Image (cartoon, rainbow, N blue to C red):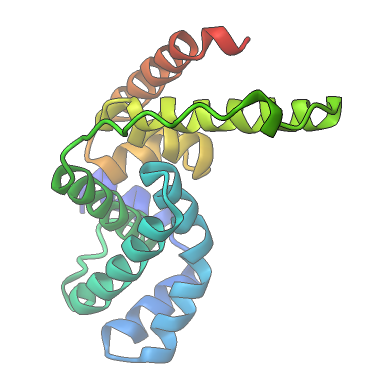
Length: 192
Protein backbone atom coordinates (compact mmCIF):
# COMPACT_ATOMS: atom_id res chain seq x y z
CA UNK A 1 0.00 0.00 0.00
CA UNK A 2 1.38 3.45 -0.88
CA UNK A 3 2.22 6.01 1.81
CA UNK A 4 -0.65 8.26 0.66
CA UNK A 5 -3.11 5.36 0.75
CA UNK A 6 -1.91 4.48 4.27
CA UNK A 7 -2.39 8.10 5.39
CA UNK A 8 -5.90 8.15 3.92
CA UNK A 9 -6.75 4.78 5.48
CA UNK A 10 -5.61 6.08 8.88
CA UNK A 11 -7.71 9.23 8.69
CA UNK A 12 -10.95 7.79 7.28
CA UNK A 13 -13.97 7.94 9.52
CA UNK A 14 -14.98 4.28 9.96
CA UNK A 15 -18.67 5.16 10.02
CA UNK A 16 -18.38 7.14 6.79
CA UNK A 17 -16.40 4.27 5.26
CA UNK A 18 -19.28 1.97 6.12
CA UNK A 19 -21.80 4.34 4.49
CA UNK A 20 -19.60 4.47 1.39
CA UNK A 21 -19.47 0.66 1.26
CA UNK A 22 -23.24 0.38 1.55
CA UNK A 23 -23.75 3.07 -1.10
CA UNK A 24 -21.29 1.32 -3.41
CA UNK A 25 -23.51 -1.71 -3.12
CA UNK A 26 -26.50 0.32 -4.34
CA UNK A 27 -27.99 1.41 -1.00
CA UNK A 28 -29.71 4.72 -1.79
CA UNK A 29 -30.32 5.53 1.89
CA UNK A 30 -26.60 5.20 2.62
CA UNK A 31 -25.83 7.56 -0.24
CA UNK A 32 -28.43 10.00 1.10
CA UNK A 33 -26.57 10.00 4.43
CA UNK A 34 -23.35 10.87 2.59
CA UNK A 35 -25.11 13.64 0.67
CA UNK A 36 -26.51 15.17 3.85
CA UNK A 37 -23.11 14.97 5.53
CA UNK A 38 -21.32 16.88 2.75
CA UNK A 39 -23.87 19.02 0.92
CA UNK A 40 -23.48 22.23 2.94
CA UNK A 41 -19.70 22.38 2.68
CA UNK A 42 -19.78 21.45 -1.00
CA UNK A 43 -22.41 24.11 -1.70
CA UNK A 44 -20.19 26.74 -0.06
CA UNK A 45 -17.27 25.66 -2.24
CA UNK A 46 -19.37 25.71 -5.42
CA UNK A 47 -20.86 29.09 -4.53
CA UNK A 48 -17.44 30.63 -3.96
CA UNK A 49 -16.14 29.12 -7.18
CA UNK A 50 -19.05 30.25 -9.35
CA UNK A 51 -20.33 33.32 -7.56
CA UNK A 52 -23.89 32.32 -8.43
CA UNK A 53 -26.30 30.44 -6.11
CA UNK A 54 -28.20 28.84 -9.00
CA UNK A 55 -25.02 27.64 -10.69
CA UNK A 56 -23.72 26.34 -7.36
CA UNK A 57 -26.93 24.38 -6.75
CA UNK A 58 -26.87 22.94 -10.29
CA UNK A 59 -23.23 21.94 -9.90
CA UNK A 60 -23.98 20.27 -6.59
CA UNK A 61 -26.85 18.26 -8.03
CA UNK A 62 -24.77 17.21 -11.04
CA UNK A 63 -21.82 16.31 -8.80
CA UNK A 64 -23.96 14.10 -6.54
CA UNK A 65 -25.52 12.44 -9.57
CA UNK A 66 -22.08 11.80 -11.05
CA UNK A 67 -20.84 10.48 -7.70
CA UNK A 68 -23.79 8.10 -7.43
CA UNK A 69 -23.22 6.84 -10.98
CA UNK A 70 -19.49 6.35 -10.46
CA UNK A 71 -19.49 5.23 -6.84
CA UNK A 72 -18.88 1.57 -7.77
CA UNK A 73 -15.60 2.66 -9.39
CA UNK A 74 -14.54 4.79 -6.37
CA UNK A 75 -11.16 3.28 -5.55
CA UNK A 76 -11.04 4.44 -1.93
CA UNK A 77 -7.48 5.70 -2.36
CA UNK A 78 -8.88 9.01 -1.09
CA UNK A 79 -11.54 9.99 1.39
CA UNK A 80 -15.06 10.28 0.05
CA UNK A 81 -15.08 14.01 0.91
CA UNK A 82 -11.92 14.54 -1.14
CA UNK A 83 -13.35 12.61 -4.08
CA UNK A 84 -16.71 14.41 -4.12
CA UNK A 85 -15.05 17.81 -3.66
CA UNK A 86 -12.87 17.08 -6.67
CA UNK A 87 -16.01 16.32 -8.69
CA UNK A 88 -17.49 19.68 -7.60
CA UNK A 89 -14.29 21.54 -8.53
CA UNK A 90 -14.22 19.81 -11.93
CA UNK A 91 -17.86 20.77 -12.53
CA UNK A 92 -17.05 24.40 -11.63
CA UNK A 93 -14.12 24.31 -14.03
CA UNK A 94 -16.30 22.87 -16.80
CA UNK A 95 -18.89 25.59 -16.26
CA UNK A 96 -16.23 28.29 -16.43
CA UNK A 97 -14.82 26.87 -19.66
CA UNK A 98 -18.28 26.53 -21.20
CA UNK A 99 -19.05 30.17 -20.65
CA UNK A 100 -17.02 32.59 -22.61
CA UNK A 101 -16.17 35.59 -20.52
CA UNK A 102 -18.37 38.50 -21.42
CA UNK A 103 -18.27 42.05 -20.18
CA UNK A 104 -21.60 43.20 -18.82
CA UNK A 105 -23.16 46.28 -20.29
CA UNK A 106 -22.64 49.28 -18.06
CA UNK A 107 -25.58 50.04 -15.82
CA UNK A 108 -27.38 53.24 -16.39
CA UNK A 109 -26.38 55.72 -13.73
CA UNK A 110 -29.16 56.09 -11.20
CA UNK A 111 -30.19 59.63 -10.42
CA UNK A 112 -28.81 60.81 -7.10
CA UNK A 113 -32.33 61.55 -5.90
CA UNK A 114 -33.22 57.85 -6.11
CA UNK A 115 -30.46 56.87 -3.67
CA UNK A 116 -31.31 56.94 0.04
CA UNK A 117 -29.41 59.62 1.93
CA UNK A 118 -29.60 58.31 5.50
CA UNK A 119 -26.20 57.44 7.05
CA UNK A 120 -27.32 53.88 7.80
CA UNK A 121 -28.45 53.40 4.20
CA UNK A 122 -25.11 54.74 2.97
CA UNK A 123 -23.21 52.33 5.23
CA UNK A 124 -25.34 49.42 4.03
CA UNK A 125 -24.77 50.42 0.41
CA UNK A 126 -21.00 50.63 0.98
CA UNK A 127 -20.97 47.22 2.68
CA UNK A 128 -22.92 45.74 -0.24
CA UNK A 129 -20.50 47.31 -2.72
CA UNK A 130 -17.54 45.98 -0.74
CA UNK A 131 -19.01 42.44 -0.72
CA UNK A 132 -19.68 42.65 -4.45
CA UNK A 133 -16.13 43.90 -5.07
CA UNK A 134 -14.69 40.95 -3.12
CA UNK A 135 -16.94 38.50 -4.98
CA UNK A 136 -15.95 39.97 -8.35
CA UNK A 137 -12.26 39.99 -7.40
CA UNK A 138 -12.46 36.36 -6.32
CA UNK A 139 -14.12 35.40 -9.60
CA UNK A 140 -11.47 37.35 -11.53
CA UNK A 141 -8.66 35.19 -10.14
CA UNK A 142 -7.26 32.48 -12.40
CA UNK A 143 -8.98 29.16 -11.70
CA UNK A 144 -5.75 27.51 -10.48
CA UNK A 145 -5.45 30.20 -7.78
CA UNK A 146 -9.14 30.54 -6.95
CA UNK A 147 -9.69 26.83 -6.28
CA UNK A 148 -7.00 26.48 -3.55
CA UNK A 149 -8.07 29.76 -1.93
CA UNK A 150 -11.74 28.77 -1.87
CA UNK A 151 -11.01 25.28 -0.55
CA UNK A 152 -8.70 26.45 2.25
CA UNK A 153 -10.40 29.72 3.21
CA UNK A 154 -14.08 29.00 2.64
CA UNK A 155 -14.19 25.20 2.45
CA UNK A 156 -12.21 24.56 5.62
CA UNK A 157 -9.82 22.12 3.96
CA UNK A 158 -6.16 21.92 4.97
CA UNK A 159 -3.48 22.59 2.39
CA UNK A 160 -2.75 18.85 2.29
CA UNK A 161 -6.42 18.03 1.62
CA UNK A 162 -6.60 20.80 -0.96
CA UNK A 163 -3.56 19.35 -2.70
CA UNK A 164 -5.16 15.91 -2.81
CA UNK A 165 -8.44 17.33 -4.12
CA UNK A 166 -6.71 19.30 -6.87
CA UNK A 167 -4.10 16.67 -7.68
CA UNK A 168 -1.20 18.92 -6.68
CA UNK A 169 1.30 18.86 -3.83
CA UNK A 170 0.59 20.42 -0.45
CA UNK A 171 3.28 23.04 -1.13
CA UNK A 172 1.74 23.90 -4.51
CA UNK A 173 -1.62 24.35 -2.79
CA UNK A 174 -0.02 26.70 -0.24
CA UNK A 175 1.76 28.70 -2.92
CA UNK A 176 -1.33 29.04 -5.12
CA UNK A 177 -3.52 30.09 -2.17
CA UNK A 178 -0.87 32.62 -1.11
CA UNK A 179 -0.67 34.03 -4.63
CA UNK A 180 -4.44 34.29 -4.73
CA UNK A 181 -4.53 36.19 -1.42
CA UNK A 182 -1.80 38.52 -2.67
CA UNK A 183 -3.67 39.11 -5.94
CA UNK A 184 -6.89 39.82 -4.04
CA UNK A 185 -5.07 42.33 -1.84
CA UNK A 186 -3.83 44.15 -4.93
CA UNK A 187 -7.22 44.11 -6.64
CA UNK A 188 -9.00 45.28 -3.49
CA UNK A 189 -6.46 47.85 -2.26
CA UNK A 190 -8.91 50.71 -2.88
CA UNK A 191 -11.31 49.15 -0.33
CA UNK A 192 -8.83 49.32 2.56
